[in-house]
Amino acid sequence: MMELLLIVAALVVAVALSTWVGRSVSVNLSWSSPLAPMTLERRLLSTLIEVSSGRAASAGPGRLVLIERWTPAWAIVMAIVTFPLGLLFLLFKTERTLNVMIESEPGGSRVDLVGATRSRTLASLDQVLVNEHGADARSVVSRL
Image (tube, rainbow, N blue to C red):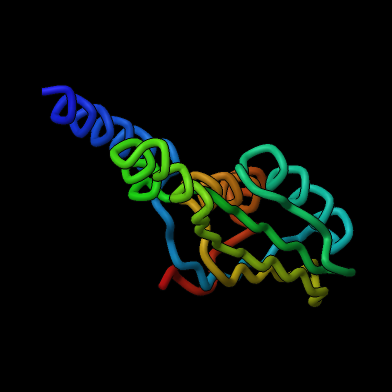
């Protein structure tokens, strides 16, 4: 009976964690913005730092990288079910990377997003790029 209770608890934790981590989306987007590349880079870096659960860093002029790492839900379930030896499952990590490239173009700059990230992070970047600049910023290429 105790084993069944542990399995049910592990499944509840796995579902809760998979919802908390958020859905991952593959991204291949491009925007045009009227802002200068340096201004846009600072604004995007601050947005990535605020909304991400990973590390956001500048990888050079006009280049930002967001790396998100987490323990997958299946590893947490296995760690609970096979405790104490199962704690080794917590060493498994999953990683996704989003590359943000900012290039100068006539009348402003172009932002390219390539990689994978959470839906929430992509929505925040879209808000910064599109909603704050209205019709001046537009999505040029759609999601994969």
